[in-house]
Image (cartoon, rainbow, N blue to C red):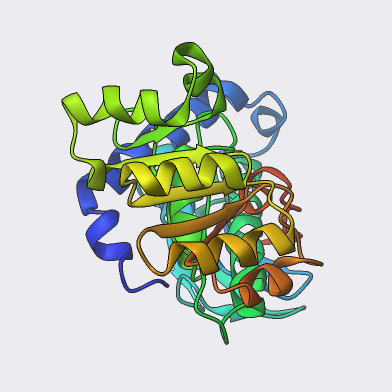
Length: 288
């Protein structure tokens, strides 16, 4: 897990997200009843094991714990791997014991969180490993699954990458459509400077002309949107370390190393949260 996770994801923030996510999922799936489990004996005890069917980074255990705790406080979950661990095909991730029917009620809800967040953490880890030899740090974006913003950003850090702003409320990023409203990069920076320090403002530019305009005005944090590799290299040369430069737009597994080689400071990528592939987990249960 990224060393900044503890400071970014304080206990209060995580607990609030887990509670909201799990409560909504339980209401969605169960409401007040599991019609299938109702036909089974009510007092049977069971032991279940969750197994992974592919290599991955484990993420989501706090959501699983809270899920089973909300369904039945007597259910016990014992983890065999720590959050953020590398897991491989066939590994038994955890053991769950308690009322047979109640375990079944939580099975799909718990695994849905596990497969989604492990998928996010694994994507983050894979991309991060690609550029670990280079200066650039990998960041996420706001392109997250609705309702799972905090959960996915947590998973990004579990995978070893970093978080951009959590929402529109916590950081300033002036984008193309904001610039259009006033006409130019320098004009909107002039307006922003009246309310904020330029150190707190990031601005997105579309080409080298806009980039030079931003640099000349004194911008200290510039996002280079959909720049070619040649354009990124030129921007780094012109910049001479005056501003933090972030490359963004159409970044994928095939070009991220080449982008890192341009010596930009940051690379942001939406794919690690929006194009994720769920990790395959399964649960088997037996009578205790």
